[in-house]
Length: 233
Image (cartoon, rainbow, N blue to C red):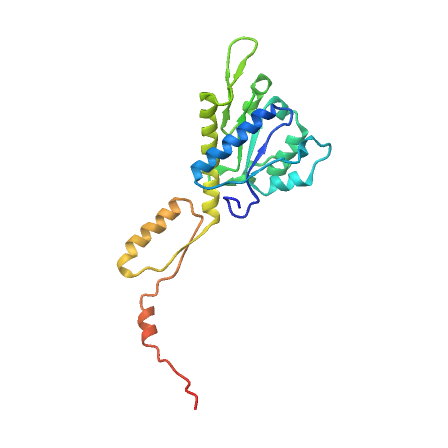
């Protein structure tokens, strides 16, 4: 069962199969644990258990996984930049024109990016420039130009937690917006508290707060309505 209602998966992790598989698996598992800890709830991550990305043809199963996922996380690298598979996944999620507004909910985007390895000439910084990203490397002087954070290092864990916080905030917002909250009609002596609860629900981004109309004389009218009984003869 997913955390966000109405979706088959909570997170789709988009990565290039040419990247270090051990790193991808460690990142995915650590992200899953960190997000679940923040939400206090299990989430479902789409997994390429059949290794569909190594095939030659675009698979409908991947397209379905992308289109039925709440959050899309792109793991950028030079291999990702040059991958036809990753481009197809992006196009499937954002549309062929790459419109971010298509996947916007409130002030958040359902598309997130992390940078495993920088693009040549730091071109990754221009990839959907308006979106912030988390980078798992540091720049260094010399021909190497950057140093990737080792798995389980303090720097890696810090970046992982930052990513998890963004994913959790997005999923929490989507869940609240898609859930219906019914604020039942209150008695007169708790009306102020009722209004405060409704405001808090709205501030917490519950998209719909259904409020039952208050009929103050409903009970009185009900008690004074004549009741007709049919008696068998």
